[in-house]
Amino acid sequence: MLPESQTVLHTWCRQGDWNAPTVVGGRGAHLLTADGRAILDMSSLAECSNLGHQHPDLIAALRAQAGELCFVTSAWGAGPRAQLAQDLLERSGFEGGRVFFTLGGADGNEHAVKFARQAAGKPRGWIITRDRSYHGASYAAMALSGDSRTSSQADAASYRVRHVPPPYAYRCPFGTTSPEACAGAAAGSVAEAIDQEGAAEVAAVLMEPNAGTNGIVAPPDYWPALRRLTRDRRVFLIADEVMSGFGRCGEWFAWQRYGRENRPDLMTLAKGLTGAHAPLGAVVVAPEVARALEQETLMTGLTYSGHPLSCAAGVAALRAYATGGLIERSRDLGRQMYERLLELKKRQPLIGDVRGGDGLFAVVELVRDRATRAPLAPWPQMHPKLQELLREALRADVSFAARGNLILLAPPLVITPEDLARALALLERLLSRLAATLDAEVPA
Ligand SMILES: Cc1ncc(COP(=O)(O)O)c(C=O)c1O
Image (cartoon, rainbow, N blue to C red):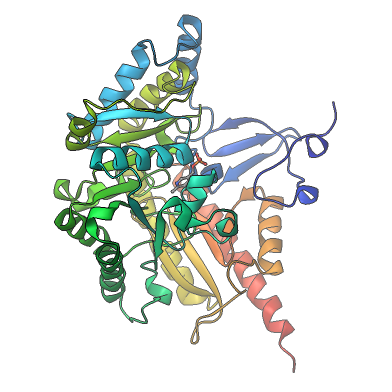
């Protein structure tokens, strides 16, 4: 067999650079490689393997479903599809709503936009999203995203998408100096964008309520402010919970921290929905949206929408989160991880900011100078020494994820406290070494 590096196009990397170990199995928070290593996964791969790798209940559910029925299109009914839709509506407080199944997050967001526009009777209504966001890599999802990697590929305005600045309190685009003020100013800019376009022309505001791959964690006042201002203006609010859902932020869905009254009108899911044991995404719509769509024909289709194998994995995943107490576990371990990182920040001046910690998700932002907040490398570049840190960690059998100056910590919710402590101790050692080599670079 030819090596994969010669036959496969790989995501998010220069093709000639791809040189990763082959994974042949998994166990809990560890990936098992072809050369016999057990690598501790501190990012749940793409922040998706919330249940850990090869969860036995998921494997059993997939086996059972494969023996019964692998596939039928959504022109026909399928038991696991109906069950998963009901479970999701009940879990999320969207009872009376409906679920549309997609294959992942990007097509989930595209369909959420489609349904919001159709339900609002605004077929080309504007969608407000923010800079430093990520909603997927298909064309409309790139237009929705405020992501430096893909922004040149899709002209947002031609998709009727308008971006506003993010609630990035550490480097507030509005020049404020507190998280509350930054959240207020950022929410204000959403209201302003709607008012400028005219509320009748705006279909929805689409935002990540908490965790995101661009490392923004909105201050707590932001989401309730978005809910208020969209409700006042009769514009739908869509939560992209693709990354933040299923315990990642200490709740089933991140918006739930703000209570029922702050429920969005639509919510998109993927990743943790099956704990990545099978590809699946979903758009969950509130009863009001479902009612508006009831007499409408949905001009859309995905051959694999509501695939029975994936839905069976989803049903088993929801059960596994509940029976394993994994949402609460994420909240508890997430708090410990966050406190540990704050301690680390006291000792390590290379750390400018630590955010997150509502569940097992935290962002560590590295700076060259804490007083001036000068970034380690200009965004979105990654300093070569940080790349070396990641390679060094992998040599010690721990896999960390990083973007630019950000280390994103998002281990599987099943990680043991001992493994978590070991990974954080390694991170501290490697950051100290990185700081020492940077100091040595300063000319005498
Ligand atoms: C918040 C968010 N939305 C959407 C997506 C896209 O999901 P997918 O890769 O399944 O298309 C991602 C993926 O990282 C994400 O983090």
